[in-house]
Image (tube, rainbow, N blue to C red; front, side):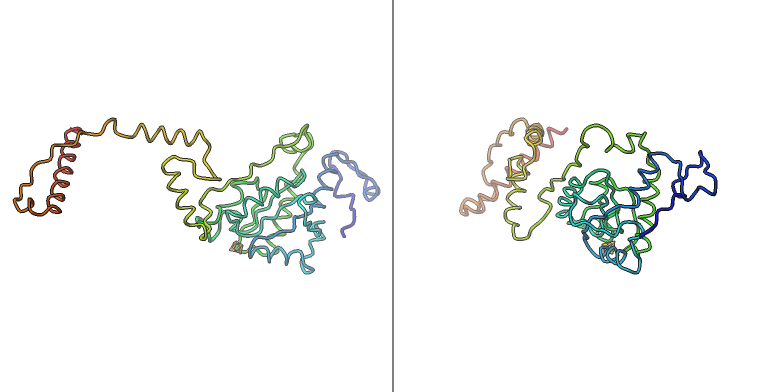
Amino acid sequence: MSQLDLRELHSTEFPVPAELQENVAITSLSRVYNWSRRNSLWPMLFGLACCAIEMICTAASRYDLARFGMEVMRASPRQADLMIVSGTVTKKMVVPIVRLYNQMPEPKYVLAMGACASGGGPFKEGYNVVSGIDQYLPVDVYVPGCPPTPQALMFGLISLQKKIDGQSLLDMDEVPWYGVGPSDPVPVPILGPDVIDPRQMELIRQQAQKAAAGQPFGGREMPAAVVDSVVKAKKAAAPAAKPAAPAVAAPADASAADDPEKAERLRKREEALARKRAAQGKSE
Ligand code: SF4
């Protein structure tokens, strides 16, 4: 465990004589507050994909996260103040991730570890992967790489410490958790029928047909206002009145009189031609 070094807290505005520097510190409340927080961040114990292996290595003995006061990974969001999003964020997982974030107490920070968490990575625009966790959560530090090395993650953690150092208790925009009232939770995303479970293909197909017709289609319905606007738009786009069916000409082909199927085909063809002519006349 690192030892308390008062020289880290000295403020240059109030110089302390050299002989007292190991015993006396004159500093600001913000500095003490930030110094204690930056050295005791507890990451949440969860990983999503291959990047998580590098995160686990970082916490092992070789790299010694205890130097940062971060060795205690908590299995409960209630006791964690740093979320390391390490791995591919699928559409299915983004919902519990945002829910866990909302359950973490303030002040809390998010570190996007690796290409997947930062922007979708090699799976960007895949049918089941979101293009970065920053579309759902406020990310404080991005660590690039696929996967980032433990050293890169540690650099990201040091960058986060520097960010915390720069926060001031006087600025409520920077430290909203210190203001009055609870902070608003991040909205939990509601994912639509694009999360495909192959076992439910028939249900999804039926729901898609109903949705296309502007009808309610089940548990994950569109809001009523959206359904109304779709129905209205469809009505407005529909033609005002059906053109009158043209008179059916007698089959020109004499042999059609003997063959009812041929006569039917000719009749349909004549009707289609008449509709086409009527449509052309309208557009002119
Ligand atoms: S960034 Fe690379 S290593 Fe990390 S989760 Fe994505 S694919 Fe795996």
